[in-house]
Image (tube, rainbow, N blue to C red; front, side, top):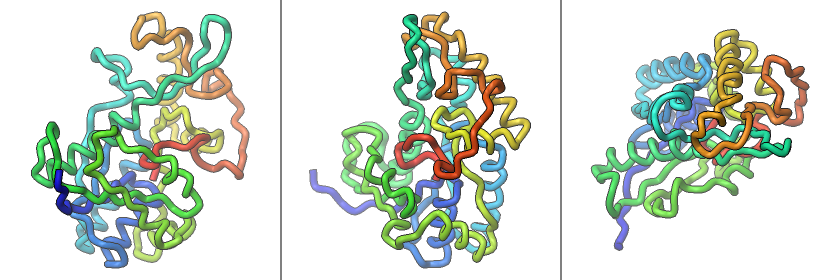
Length: 274
């Protein structure tokens, strides 16, 4: 198939890096995308939703790229209703007492696929079938998290119509640089963007979740609710599930502050939390 150049899009996680990238696109230091797309999992921190409103207002004031919000549904509630569950990489104790981890499906289903659907719709291409257009996707990964770009994978092997770019890496910008940019343009400092029920949270990330009473109560409730979910027979889970690697209830853990690991304990797919 002969490919033709498609549109440019910004993957907007509403975190530090992608917010800085949105600012740079607005003031002309980066190419302007057709849309900045926010894929809502339904269980982002309250601070992220508040920041997104602020970002939209800033974009309207300074003629930023249009922000489009898309969603597959509510990742939180979808674990309890419906017939198909997109599993989070929770920790599981098997019947022999060993600890394992579930396969991660949430990033693909709730972030990558909704983003891809929106891009194809914006380019006037149906979701099913071939795509002659090659969309350029701007991903907000900074210099200090370059490993995420190396490990990032497309949603499927049929996504050769997407070309990923990493403008912050090209500009050699760090996360600290990104914070300075959002402050200079008058946005303020964005919050950390990652689902409140993400098992990839490091202890310091859990401490950040804990600062918001409502977010923390939601995470603790979810952690307890999934504990014996394996008894339902759904998804082939063999034992109790936990959000923390110690396989202890969240509200029973004394989190350790480790400033050498301030974010997610393991790499995500290069699209969550940016």
